[in-house]
Length: 107
Length: 493
Image (cartoon, rainbow over all chains, first blue to last red):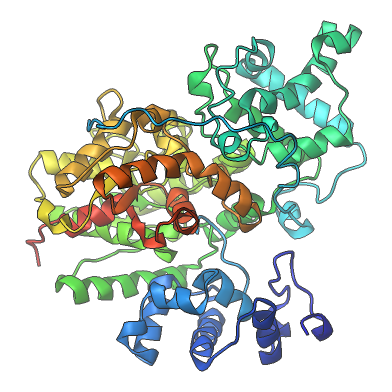
């Protein structure tokens, strides 16, 4: 399905052009990783996209966990829950589905 | 210094698996990244001429390099010292074999015997196959110097792999992960590419978290001119866990000690990947950002956060550049490490620690290779080994050291150092962590260790990724200053 969408990505599957992003692309990327996007996944993806639009960077983990805690309940406002949603790491996997570049650095 | 009650770890030398890691190589940097660093973006036509010219220049500039390439006696002392060899069994990961990748070319083109009778002296032509091997195996060295410390002659494979990478860069084979980071650090001031407003937002969020947790208004100031201390810390401290809890720990210590401090948005990065790629020009440019920030903010002290190779750069490259900062108070070490600052505050009784606050933890310490073997800390011999342990022992009641042949100057790299902390090298990183994990497992079995403390951003990220492969949880790696911060008795509002 991802192939049929005809999008350009880098070697690791991150979108080369942020503006190419669509909901279908996010779903297809998740499916390729055997992951089904639930409303809770979308809470994270939407927040990442909004934050990126404002700050040109994905949010730090603490900002993300705090936001998710507010939206989905305090018991979910931690990185353990985010790892349940995105087992390859919330920063990397969620950024990919959100169409954002991969975070770089010692992370 | 804490003494381990364990016998030396029995390190099994693996069976040789010829070429078993020949498939492992990092992604190459694309044109955008290479161009930003004034480097060619693909293998250039006259690569061989440029490679040999570059090696020639290196040999002229570094007498040490020539000595390293001339003087190996093939004694074998280094063969079982590299964590990547121990983890993979690929003989090209024996340090001597890694050095020979460059040495054979050196001999062929720069020694009389190699020019006349190459086959008799192990000299080989520089071919594309050799270049391919360089790209693979110079990116399977984390430049940790464990082999160098066992070499009777002192041959430093880290320097050789840096030269190898510098040549590769010059002929158009740059490494994506490191070069992308360098270009971000040079434009945005940090490896993440975190712009100033995002950094300000992140720090404000952390201040709110601390108030919520402690009820105390601990500040994380940004760009505050005339602060006493400029904190230069790895940008992972702003972004990731468990790093951020270390940053909170530094902030609590500064607050409780009544020290004024600031972070700079212009130089918001301690890490310096120019070291890893052997790109001295870029290394100095990034270091110069710290100098400029210190001058502009008129700070009196510069303190480095928990970052292994940043401290190596801080000790080995930064001091002459910092001569240009006139406001620095030379009664303090320039620069100084956060662990040393905390250590002095504990000794002077300017802060109080309640070690029982960490009674739910049983802690060990992973010496970061760059701190243990490439730098110094404090004013006592081997302070880089003793001072972090003294700080930890003041902060917790249950501290245990891993086996002595895996700690201190014998420490094993975490497996992700030297610019290799990238996902496409996960197989190598997991295998390279094996010696450290074996030591941790042995200690865990004997003492029920719950946490491994580290004071390097790369070590923390690497362990968070590889712990689950070895039966541990990713949150069992912890920042030294999280342990300090949790034990700190907060008396000031």
